[in-house]
Length: 603
Image 1: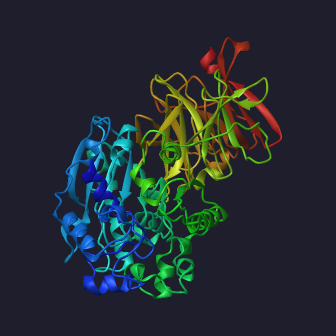
Image 2: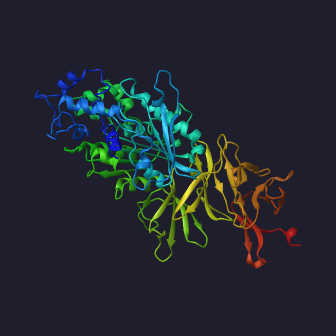
Image 3: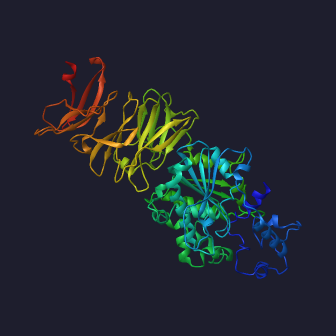
């Protein structure tokens, strides 16, 4: 355990002394840092978290020999093969080491590789891509402490990523490597039990800067044919590098010497490397949860609070869903080293965020909240709705007081980022099959095309997964109501073709058109308890469209109206007055409502 701690700590400081890699000779380097020329360094002159580990005699000062000895011993350590397996509880997992995610000429292969920690026997598990710290110049993917164990315990597949280091490469190369690792995981996630559409990005210190940069500057993922929507969420853990110009201002307008190697002293480079520069509305920046600590011991650092809160405020102003975790009681190192340990509220907040998050109950109609397109689940009092940020929520309504009442006393956010197509059509819909109720909705894929998603209950939460992988504009509005089938049937709009199709949830990519459908404005619906779709279509040489229904089992289309007038908003329902017979209805010329019996069926 001590070996893990020593290796991990050495990589966590934002701008550590790169003693073993610097081109400056050690003696000259020591002299530069020794501001009072007393032949030794105190914690202010040498502010790294491994200070106490280096201070072998415990006198509060470091000599040149103590520093040399520390770095020499670190280089001699053998790499830890599976640090997560050594954590308390010995969480069972599968491990895969040194998997290459890219091949770059001149780069050491290990620097473009990743390690995977996966729960046993999982499929479609969410994926956490972890980016280590180390001042952009040190660190290794093996430095994970208990993080894989914590995430595997929660059902995540973890990919710990290496990247090229300063000063050998520019800052953008490191972000390019992180994006390449994300693209690789999307292609290979299923082989390790992960879901390609459920990738989260998290990093600490320098890694926090990199995940925030890749999550705001769309250019890095775009190079791999991906958009920012490829990320379900981003978690930066404790960095001051959101705005490098602001960071440099504390030092007279120049970056500290120890940070200049990763970013140079060029303000133009600082702007490109600053996540805050790239925050803007309408970019599809994924939701974030931003954590900050109290800084380094023995000195606190209030700038961490300022930097994190300013970045969060900028994200909120751009309409990005964002939360903040204030952990001033923790040091910069503890935020990562203690992640997932008993009582760690940082991990508790992160897991709540990654799994959908909760919010306090509010009364329906509260002016602080927007409820969009609510749909009730008959017989259970559950309601699904969108909020003003297009998050999908499920709550349970208490009719006595109008409050949501889930089993935990809190509402559940199922998913985020519902497709733009659902803004002008239907949002989440309840559907039924032999396994019970499920949610169906449209969410954009990495190329911005709407795809069908399904969310099913998993305890008090809902697990979401994509159903379709259709090309082009794909799905728009969604309709589903088929309560008796053993397999849910879905109906949805194709905006690029201005038509409506239907599909089976078990074979969602096999779509079937509605014959002679008149376009989205016509509106179509499933007839509850049947395999029929009712809509309006033009028949033969008739000048007026007529109300019809399609039998999705046989493909037969039956006409149920025959009078003049434009037909809109077709519906079907069972009428107890006719022994439960299915009746059809529509609006004629937007002025008259008509109800029809299929007399051929009743004779």
